[in-house]
Length: 191
Image (cartoon, rainbow, N blue to C red):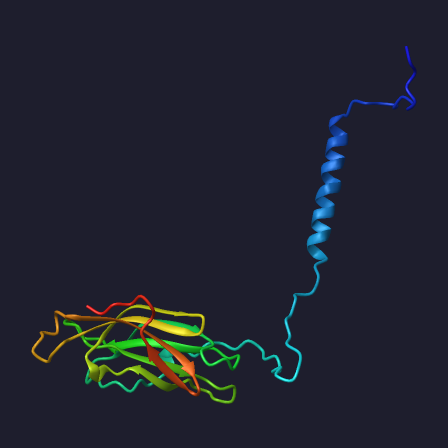
């Protein structure tokens, strides 16, 4: 029989108290590591085109805006809204789809872009993407990657009843050279 080069261990069986001690030590390390976290990472551009970092601002609230839509005795209803930085200035804009809160029928939508500068107390409308006078309804509305997309339902003529739009168009707006440019996304078809 060959002798072991490693001396015999004093004990090779563990007791419940040793498991409790090990679990307590591991829990202590986990708890301590959750308290000692590094500062959050911040990205900064460098170079001649670098812009100063801005604190994140709240998106404009559409409920604080007087929209340029005539509703008579009924209120303006904000049906959909989305926020994001559309013009690349580091501050979010809000795009709101609104209509008159009519009890029946299909009132046309307006789509408006809102902004609010740091020194302004109220948000304001800076662009009209869809004018309610065009008699369009907006569906499938989204804001992604600095672009606003929507499906517009409209009418081929004034003889088509308001209940039954017969034209469908997918559209996209992006901020280019100081204005919102409307285009048709690739693969979109009009009905």
